[in-house]
Amino acid sequence: MNLSTLDLSVIGVYALFIIGLAQWVSREKPGHDKTTEDYFLAGKSLPWWAIGASLIAANISAEQIIGMSGSGYALGLGIASYEWMSAITLLIVGKYFLPIFLKHGIYTMPQYLEQRYDHRVRMIMAVFWLSLYVVVNLTAILWLGALAINTVTGLDLVYGLVILGVLATAYSLYGGLKAVAFTDIVQVVLLVFGGLLITYLTLDKIGGDSGVVGGFNELTAKLPEKFDMILSPDNPFYKDLPGISVLVGGMWIMNLSYWGFNQYIIQRALAAKSVQEAQKGIAFAAYLKLLMPVIVVLPGIAAVMLAPDLSSPDKAYPEMMKLVPAGLKGLVFAALIAAILSSLGSMMNSISTIFTMDIYRHFKPDTDTNKLVSIGRIVALTAIVIAMIIAKPLLGNFSQAFQFIQEFTGFFTPGIVVLFLLGMFWKKTTATAALTAAVGSFVLSLLGKLFWPELPFMDRVGLVFLACTVLAVVISLQSRQEVKGETVNVGEVNFSTSNGFNIATVGVVLILSALYATWW
Figure 1 (cartoon, rainbow, N blue to C red):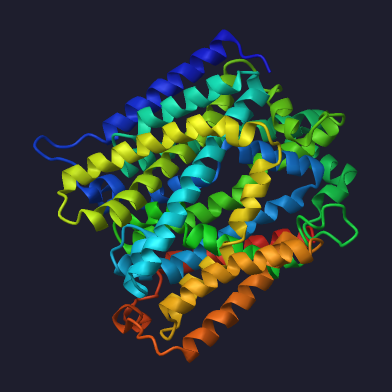
Figure 2: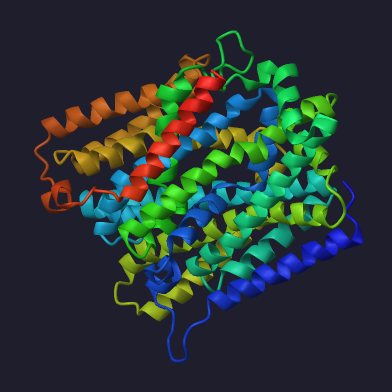
């Protein structure tokens, strides 16, 4: 896809604007230096609209836009379950998990684990997440972001890596979470506008004189198989989306782990002014998740009619971008960059938070808050430099490396969910049982992969979760280990929600019920 001089100018203006905005929102009053709460939790002052926008911006990156559009091209609307089920998960997190975390005033997920279990659990999980975020997540976002840009524009991958790394550092390093969260508002607006524009143009082209509505009706009439939400066992993509398991199986475990216990995501909710403000932000994010398939999946399905002979499904979104006129094309491309930068900035901030607050402060407990902020910046910079260096050697020569790493990461997901859920809602859970569940999750997942390879990944996650739950319960009941009772009394936590949150929840349930009933 060729970008005109006007397009390139729009992209350049956007880059300068987002860096300038980040510096402006990060400024401090004269005589006030950033504290750890300022840098890592935005001074616990984030409003609901910043929380909701930032949750989505951190979640959606360029490779997901291109990848989900490609999945829409290949298997259809069924891939939207990842987005739509996330909306329900967000509301569960907002009602039942956030009140517990915010009551404990934590900076990080490992910090909560120490309060609930012991220091062993905190350090083991902090090292695990830190290694995972640096070596896998940050590197993958950077590499696949560069790959997405290469797919769209042909820009050399190495140049893409450097440009993305420099831009992410320039806008997020100084201000920390506050810079990331408030600029994410602009990023999400751009992302939604660009996505809706492409959807409009593709459906309008299919509809002709009938317009967008006619285009959608023609799409559903001519490609009904692309609008099956629950795939049958004879579908070639059943292993990726195993029928009814999408609604009642392992996807719940993956979503709860990602949205509820993932530092990279939950950190902006921990920075809320109050529980109520965080819950409003969560509800806002849930409705944005309902919208995402319209933005990223529908263009992929439309590409089946407009470009039926693509050599790869992942070329669907770049191909549809060609419909966008000059100038606006630059804006749509800037939306892709926005998605990458948001994810990179969020990941850098989470890495610096875990290292500084869970590891460095443990060994240097008397370090003053200003130095901790400086340490956080150094760690964030070091992490992005490491990711830029190892991205190509790690992922560049092995096309399936990322998929393998993602599945490897998923080996730990059931154990992490068991560790948190039992820790929050069952006071007899012991630290040893929690660690056993975490280790057992990997062992059982690996055995399942080796000896039952035909089992869909999503189903394996669900079965391993059940097995780890039983394992943790049995060990806890047989153990004489003392439980830290002062941190597990959920009776002291207020789980009540506002009428607005309750109405928003009912709205999401009704919308999803209608969607699945229509395209079951």
